[in-house]
Structure formats: C-alpha cells, structure tokens
Image (cartoon, rainbow, N blue to C red; front, top):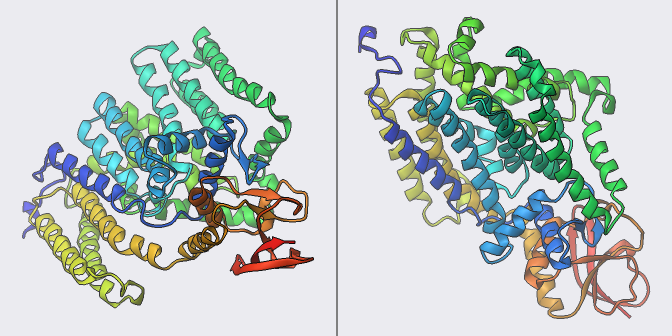
Length: 537
C-alpha cells in the first residue's frame, strides 16, 4: 500500500461507540476471576485490620493483632468494611472491589474532564490508556491495596482545581479540594497536603491568580480540612493517645526524603525513577515518541486542560523524583496527567508519514505478533499444566490477536483503539491463566492452606498468637499476614497477640519461643522460621 494512501489517526474509521465497547472489555478484564487468588503482600494486612476494627466496634482506632497500628489512618479500612458489609463478608472479591471501582473511577474522571474541557473521545482514550498501563492493569488493579483508591481521591483534587476555576466557582473549588484532601490525609496522611499545596501554588502562579490563595473561599476550604482531620484525631484521642500515631505518620514520609537515605541511593534514584515510570506507563507510554522534536509551547498552547495537566504532573513528579524512597505506586495519580499530554502530542502529529507515526504503527504490529506468540507459549509452561482449557485459551488468544492485526492493518481500527484493545485481550488471557495458577500453587495459597489446617485442628477453642516479648511492631514476629487474615475469616474472630500463656486454648508460636510442658499439635514454616501450634500445660 502506497504511503500517499495512509490515513492519519483522525481519518481512520472509528467511533466513540467503539471505544466504549473496548472500555467494557477493559472493565470485564478487571472483574474477571477477581477473587480467585488468595490475598497476598499487603492485602491481608489491610483486610484483617478492617476485621479487627469491626470486631472491636471501634471505627477510630486501627489495630493489628490487637496492638495499636500507626502506619496508616483508617479511611481505606472503612471502605473495606463497607464493601464487606454490602457483599456478605471479608471475601477476596469484596476486599478487591474498592480497588477495581477506583480504577474505573480514574478513567471516569478523565472522560468527564474530556467532555467538559477537551474532547470526549480523547478523554475516553486517555482514561483507558491510563488504567491499562502495565503497573496498574496487570498488578495493582488486582490487589486489595490502598494506592489506586488514594490515586482516585488525589486525581479528584487535581481536576477539581481546574474544573471549578474554569466555571468560576471559587467556593466549590476550595471546599471540594480540601474535602478530598482531608479524605486523602485520613487515607495516607502527609502526601495529600503536599499534592494539594503544590498543585494550588502551581496553578494560581502560572495563571497569575496568586491573590486567590488569600481569598475567603480558600480559608473556608482550609477550615473544612482542619475540621475533618482534627475531628478524627479528637475522636481518636478519646480512646488512645494520638501522639505516637502522628509521629509515626510523619516518620513514614520523612524516611523517603534525601535526608532519610544515602547519597548513592539518591543518585541511583535520580536516573532509575523516571525510567521506571516510563516502563510502568507502557504500553501507552510508547506515545512519548510523539514528544520528540515537538515544541512544547505549541503543545501547551493547544489546550488549557493539557497545559494544566502538564504543569501539575511535572511539579508533583519532581517532588518524588528527589525522594529516594519513592515507588511508582506513589504517583499513580500522575499517570493520567502524563497520558493527557502524550495523547495530545499524538493528535498534533497529523502527518501519518512522520517517523513517530511510522514507529507507532510498527510497534502495534509487533505487539500483536508478540501477543499471539505469548498465547502459543502458554502450552509450554509447566506451571499451567493443570488448566483444562489451556489449549482452547491459546487458540482463542491467537485468533483474537489475528483479528486485531487484520483490522488495524486494513485501517479499520484507529491506532489508539488498537493499542487499548490489544492490552485488554492480554489482560483477559492473564486472568484466565495466571490468576488460576496463583490460586493453584503459590506461596499465598500455601499460607492459606496452613490457616485451614489450624482452623480444622482448633475448631471452636480459643486461639492466640504467642510471643513472650512486649512490642508494638508485630512485623518482628514473622508470621504470615496471609495466614492471619484467613484465620480471622474462617474463625469469624480476630487472631490476637498474647505475650503470656495464661489463657486457655491453642497458641501459634515460634518453636524457638516454646518452652515448658506443652503439646505440639502442628508444625509449619513461614518466612524462614519454624512455627508450632501448641497447647501449653
């Protein structure tokens, strides 16, 4: 096919309706087999803290194994409790639902902002590209974790600033911003203050409205923030001293700064963090090629919303770039802002013969080929031998990739739609192959099996976690939080830390801490330590 007949991205036949259909496929991938794999990593901790809060009938004081928990405020635990209450208990599905809904919410915010300040189609494409970035789509959207919920709240702060200023509603702007900041502060503490302060300063400085920061509306917003955040700690103080809680939250944030790390770690972070961010943004991050050789002034002046997203992303990213303890999940709320800029750069490159468009086209064709090869490779992975439908999944995946390849090559699907569609198909194959494997044979499944064994042995008798040391740092105990979570769910009562053995019942203890007359009922190993289920006499 001659180059003169190549269509530009805006000319290839497609429609917003087709994008919505692809969006439904993305949502289907987010929900598919969502609860099949056991909770792991930080998921069980988030969940059993919520279980303890509900069991204690105390929504203000988070506890972990009965000890005060200072690492995070409780809003996300409240969300998990609400999900469990609506969907019949603390199941894996109910625990992960808030994460999936938050992921969808991030895309929804971009659709809303696109409709009001940019373009519905671009907003939808950007939203889908943002939530199908590798780190989010194939990892954190599958976990009952705090980060995507927090990212949704913080993205709401960013967009509220721009949206309400554009429609000239200052009180709505500051009250909404500081309400969401309070929710973020009671979810993940100090980062919310930094995000809000930096974003407000950046916007009102570059729009030359600095005086707005001294307005009555702004002070009203600040007042609302202090009312909500101080109100929570006032309630907390009625049960426990909030000083250690606040001190710990401050320490968690300060440890990620330059002062909390060495020079070598700082220098490594300077080059690794932006590179890791770009990799994590893939496949949508490939659009960065459209920034090369482009005048940023032209790009930023093409649309006020794009300009806003650029500056808010840059200044907030800079803070984490110079903070060596930062991880990609801390800036997931910036990914949609980066993607807005990349999508706009893509649309401003109208010449389909431009080298960036050529590169992107080849990338999509290679991607479809690699996806088909990956589907074939499923048949040669020993860990997937247990899947009864492996061959059918492989054939179906290859055929789906072939169809996408054909229609894209024939200019029936736009490039961005092709990229999102291909990624959605990969997620469905991932759901049907990898998630069952994790439920079939993984460290998390083994930790869950131990909980089932213990529950069958203990039955209705009391069960405690024994450690003959006084501590508030339960991590030192080395018990798997996966086992703790499943014991809580199976027994419908929280497992509590016990520093002595005067109580009647069973005790889970490190074998090194077991002494005196006892009956050893079960032996097992976790995190490199030998444990026993015992009854002391």
